[in-house]
Length: 454
Image (cartoon, rainbow, N blue to C red):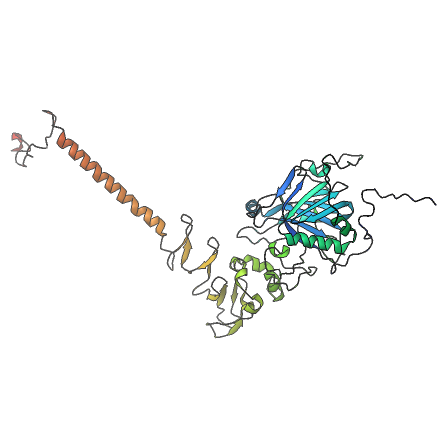
């Protein structure tokens, strides 16, 4: 009996054995995110240094869509805050085109049989001192991109260095648990051939590849002027690609939801979620309004147990009522029982309730801490100073400048006078040149000469 020839390319035959039509249980195989130090493809290399705090640089294992994703930020953290968005790039590698992969120490080396796709995208991030909340990333999937100078389209070998050895170990365990074919590949070293190149697919019409990221936030399809689409899969799927699956409680910036300043979604698979915005939302506090309170946003990390702290009782001096803190945040709230409608604001810097009519809360957005209600921030010396109850006092830096000006001018004038006096003493007066300092001063009787008498 003749053998039947397979229609699948030889490079991919027998590697990924998991059927594509079977659905992946997100509880068994949740998505995984790991930060990387660098990714290198040929001569192109993207690095993420320790000083690049807050920048996106991670690989994603998306088992529901069966692909490996590199997601990294193209603009700096400072520029992202100024623009109000992050310029992102995403490289998507389906599991079926991975023909070899090996993980040793803190590096992962893999070989692909086809050209991976790269897309540009944006993610709106909070501006400094602003109230713009984080959103999901949007990518232009209708237009391929490239920032590698053509290395991604030609070189089949990728080298990834993660932040820790334990992260590489977790990647290996997750892949081997998802598909037994990865077990064989992980135990086979990747032999790099410097002359090997990826085959370029012939297309009827040329594909335009963009090399510059978008300079404005992309909109989803269906919105006016929409050009992009969200990075997460369709809503029918149980798990979205940008939701978190933290096991440490979502209490640090490593959480994808918390770093984007948004509550965790119902599709998130995190355990013991301590996302502050999620806690506020569960307590009945509007998360969007909470982001407008700079004092609250700055001091999220100060509160050890936010759920318990929101239940703290406070005595209101206006009418003696006892209220919970959750009823007085965010921003300014009036007394729920007082007829005088006294207004209070909670200082998250000092953990006190401030009466806005007597001693209002004064949170300085420049110093990022609460000051005395009579303090004002000086733009010249960039510090807060006591300005008085009516703001009549001036900053000491301006007073010091004014005090130094007369002292300098007086010293210069006295020095010039003495130099003039000493110079005239040493230089003799010429005859008939005028007044001589050694000549006696005439009295009032002979100042006018003989013609002064009538």
